[in-house]
Image (cartoon, rainbow, N blue to C red; front, side, top):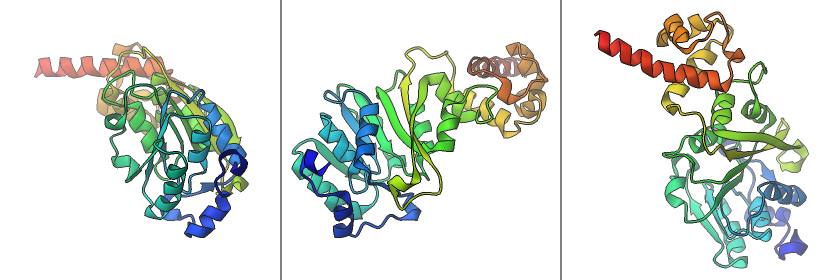
Length: 286
C-alpha cells in the first residue's frame, strides 16, 4: 500500500500517533492492506461514488477506498485520537476525504448524502455494527439513499444477515435483510489480520437494495419478528399471543402450530400486513 499511495505503513502511523485500539470503542484495527483493498473492491466501481465509512481508525480501509478511485469519502470517527492520522490522508488526497468527528449512531447519513451514487463501506465496530445496519435498512424512504453496503461483522452476525428459513442462524435480522436487500457473504477475515486480534473470525457482507420489496410497514414487521423470535421454540399461536395469536395467524393463512424459524420472509410480511387488519377490526369493534 505504501508503494500504491506513498503514505507510511499503518503500523508506523499507529505507533507515531499512539493509537492503541480501545475495547470500549469496539476497535480492532485492520492492518493487512491487501485485505483492505479486497474489501473496497467488493463494493464494485467507486469512481463516481461518494463512500460513507464508519470508524476508519488510522485509515487503512480509507486509504484503500481512495486509492481505488472513490470520488469522495465521508468518514465518521468517534475517537479524536485518530483525527491527526486521518488529516494526513486528507492532505494526500485533497478535496476527497471529509472527516466528521461524531457518533455514527447519532449521525443522519441520509442528510449527508449528496447527489449521485452513495456506497457504505466499513469495518464496523463490533459493539454498534448490527444497530447501524438496521438503521440503514429502515430509512425514511425506499429505495434508500445508498446503492450498496459492504460491511465487516463477526462471522456469526454475517451468518444471521444472510440466513433463510429453517437455518439455525435465521432470526429478526435475516428477515429484515431478506425483505429489503439481496445479501451475500463475500469472504472471511482471520483474527490475525487485526490489531489486537479479536477472538472470532470476521466476514465481509455485501448488500444491495431490492427495488420493489414486498409492501409492508417496517414497524409492524419489527413487532412480529420480535415477538416470534423472542420465543422461537414455541408455536406461533403462543409466541404471537400478545399480537392476536391464533386469529392473526388465521388471517395470514399460516398454521398456528408452526414455529418462527419455519416462516419465509414473505410469510412474515403477510403477518405484518395482517396485524394492520387485526388492529383495524379491533378498533371497529370498540
